[in-house]
Image: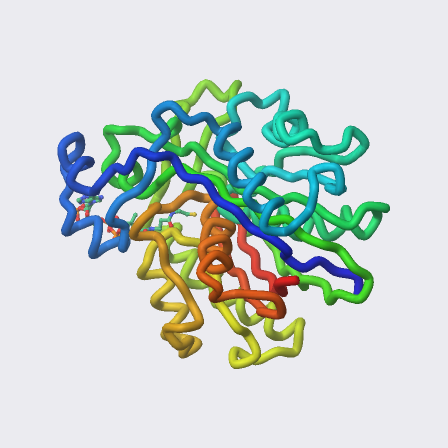
Length: 315
Ligand code: COA
């Protein structure tokens, strides 16, 4: 015992939609190629919106839905690799913007696309050691800023957006049983830091990431089911990191997950990295497809190479 449940979720995506046909005007690609290989039809890219504004809007919505005031929050984690500034962190900026308490931990977390999952686990640990009951975990990215617009194999994949969850800790709640890990590889997915002298955009060997992902996702599901002693039928909903529809389809087929128990929104947003899982959660909560008592299995993977799974209940 001693765990967190999700109370409220929110999301914010930039207004501007970029279709596959829009991208075909700047790189040698086609709507047909992108749709069949990835499932992506469009994505949202920032024009005027800032990373901080996306975080704040998603977080406000999550607080509202949770019925929790900013003064009740006991910790704030923003999972991101694209914050506006390294210092102050996006989480510090959010503390100021929302008026979160001064005496709580607020920091950014970089675990690439697995960031939200690692953030949830970290928040569960923080709240276990805190006097406060609620925590705010945000996943936010403005990936359009770090894409190489001459590389058709990467620039078509990613979108901008933010998702947020307000979680509640209680000693009566089960732990989310997060299973997290890293298969260290510094080549297949890279975004150089400030002093590496390399290109400042993302590079990726898509085939190798694909191969990793189709192993990692089932591994995450197996680990979480084993640890919690649950079966596929005990899970109300499966939420996958939205990186490629084919990766999701393979997992769905392997575990025979019925259509009403999983969800894809990659067609609308592309891969929004750390934001992808909380954006899915907020759409599901808004549509009433997950509600109080729903048990949701999350599975994700990303640069690092990182992987993670967790079984989280809605409060
Ligand atoms: N439009 C048209 N053709 C493209 C293209 C594009 N946008 N991008 C690549 N191609 C071409 C390649 O140049 C290659 O051509 P060639 O055979 O003449 O060399 C061909 O399409 C096949 O490329 P390949 O890389 O084998 O395609 P793929 O089926 O593996 O799909 C990805 C590429 C990137 C969509 C796929 O590998 C993938 O989704 N990987 C996982 C990426 C991911 O999840 N990243 C995020 C991690 S969180």
